[in-house]
Length: 571
Image (cartoon, rainbow, N blue to C red; front, side, top):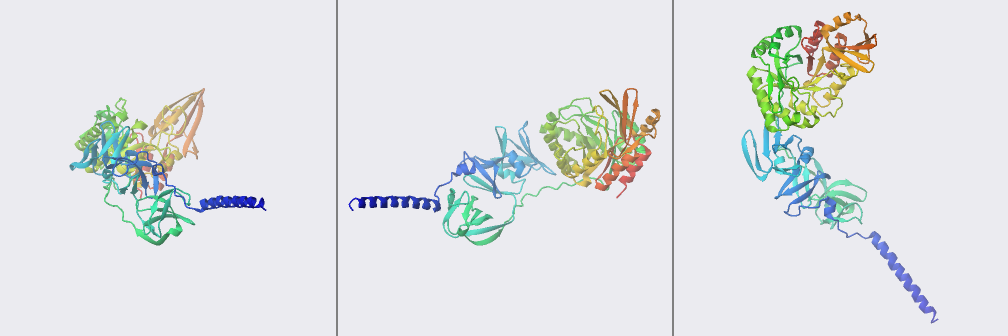
């Protein structure tokens, strides 16, 4: 017996120890974790702006934490330019050459110098208590308070994050029923973000079976057990509406535009006005190619004539002077020109002064040699030019290549906002010297360009330009050459080569197609004629766009101009 008792005691001890261990595991499994979350890690900030100090802040936009962060400098909240453009207003523009931040609305431009307090606009200089913007490395930071002058949003700063609202609606809230914890994830083992006190109000973001995703009054987002929530209610938020954007008022024409470009390459070209008007039946706008950029400073050559304008007005025509970047025989560095505010403004001021001097009704921009790098700066140029055009009653139109996809870098959506007309040059699908025979303007090319433009530009602002020319392609071995032939000369050409009436309608391109061989050479023509133009005009009419343009006066036939006149006069 004496030997058995120690064994029983040992077994009991083993059972007790096992029970304790097992109970510990059960207790550990079902007990609430007291682990605190690393808030710096949770918010992704390595230099948090805790208290009144400077540093980084995570951004809570509406109810989600975004990748971008705000910074606090000298007690002021700043966002980098990309963040501002993405979430608040993309119109902000930074001139990195002259160290200026610009915001060009429909009627004015506000300008702030990097690293300085205050800004200026047409009303004068305005002082601020904070540095409006500053450059750090290659990033420009803009004060949140300055951004609020040009965008509707609210923000509230906390230790490691900032809450931003750009949209407002109805929010569902609950009271906390008893003291509990807000956790990183739904689960009692998830780390604690902060304590929740009884009676505290939280906003419901997402409700699940036993846990809910909520946001506290200090915009901490986490999870709490449903059993800890009570007294559901709804709150209607009050939106911020202090910023009212200036309205873009169009100075467009009544009815459809019917524009004919008048190619003028010297002052003597002005003498052909009478002949061009006599040919161009149905046009209500004539656009002489008078002005060409001559340097990277904003200078341009001019063949303008006040007598020409007066005579055109006498014919009942509007005159839109054309500014181009390729007819002066000078290679223009578009990035050098448009990325400097001083140069852009010099060009804008000289254009407006010239337009007013000669009594022009509008300005037509035909800059075709721009690099992709210069496009953002060109868009700013258009914004600045559009302000001056509106203030002086000038119609602004911009010429564009056919957009080959919806995300083209020309930003037709911006043009559709700031300009009166966006002109699509619906030709040169296959252009002179491209080395590949094909149509100048097949129907799919034209209709596709119109449709992609309409995705970004209001229909009444879209003008499609027709080619009053075609190309004869010659393929000899591997060499492909071409010659452009105006509509008015096509019939004579076909007679001369003995192919009059030989063309066959091609349903794919909606053009009459002709091919023949002479010696070792193969010749091909996709004809522009009355039939092909009629199809294009029918598409344009069906899309309800703002008008038609023609390249160019002097190239047409009476039958072709009859079609244009009928289209322009249609409802």
